Picture (tube, each protein chain N blue to C red):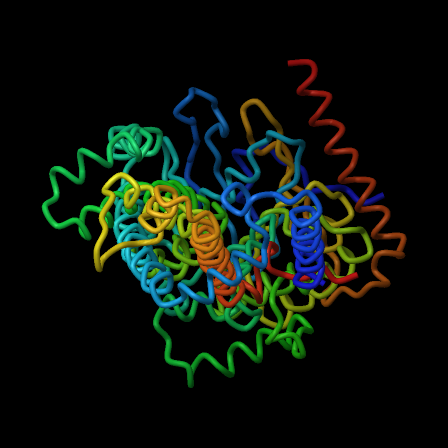
Length: 256
Length: 277
């Protein structure tokens, strides 16, 4: 049901789109039919696939970097309120500054373009991991904290057996948001950098298609970005289900 | 009419029980950092083998007193002795304490068996040694078939049983319970009370129990401490001299009603005194 229903909506929309374009004779350089896009996708498949690979590589590297850095920062934050209060505003600053605005600076400062792109995407993907993991590490049942204290649990025991499991639902919530942001960050950074050649990502394909008025190709690239985003999100949902499925309210099917 | 054994707090310890002292509270009081005086100086001895209940209105410091005994908080003045020694020796064989909280406080991500095993895991007990203990604790609370379940699959009463099993698994010498059945419906509560009093009897387990319920206090206790508020203090002490083990039918006996009436009268007296002062 959760797959079939949205799929049905998609199919109906695509059919209406196709019929409308044909009925009103919309020119291909203004708004292509789905069939035009499909043809373009098939003919330009090798270059588009390579571009998708580049973009995904940047996005995934950035996502991994954001997970590692964000989790580490969260662990530092929960060590003391003073540390969190001193540094959290800067994390917020990082979050609210539009990546388009700082991307040129990063691209100038970092010599290697690939690294620069990854840095940009990491900056975008970092904040949800920091804030969610910090919240999770703090959201421990005070009764269980007392129980651990009474059982004379050590710091590491409390961390592994209590704090980390308590934080997992929040952490996975952060992953879902962050995975999408990493992809957005990668695409935005590619736009700003405008890198072409062999290392071109999907954003470059979109830019080029715009210059050449190859609108079906633009749509094809867009479609690939969207599918990549959906794919990432689906993987995160799956991971979350795998880790929390047995016990957490958010993942447990309600028994009627 | 039974004459309740009422004394002033200073003389409470006289004839507290036959057993050796397990906990001695020596003029311990508690003032919270915000200046609230939660407990006036308390003198109380918990004797080995007794089932001691703390009862009183909200804010009378009964939970605070229990936390002092658990060493979850420290007294502002005065001292507490455990088995005539300091808290550093608590946890060694023959001197272990278990605490049952108001809520089941189970780890939602862990199965029932893992929840029950937790205190043993934290003490790094090997699996071969802990397994029979877990099975024993689960069977004592009637949850043999539920070891592989997650807490969310259990009812409120069953979760509380898991919590009790977890406290029994360390084979404690002193069991502290802070209104453990307060959130449960009356039928479940009565059943768990009956199970608890049986467990206490089988194991000769020294227990300090906090409750709001007169019926629960009378059914379970060998001695009831009536506390008053502002500041929290011991007002009256009442012994429930009834044979053990007590069964469900004790609830329907005239003597049970008699004890309840006497305890209720004491509580009324305490609250009237409080209104006047």
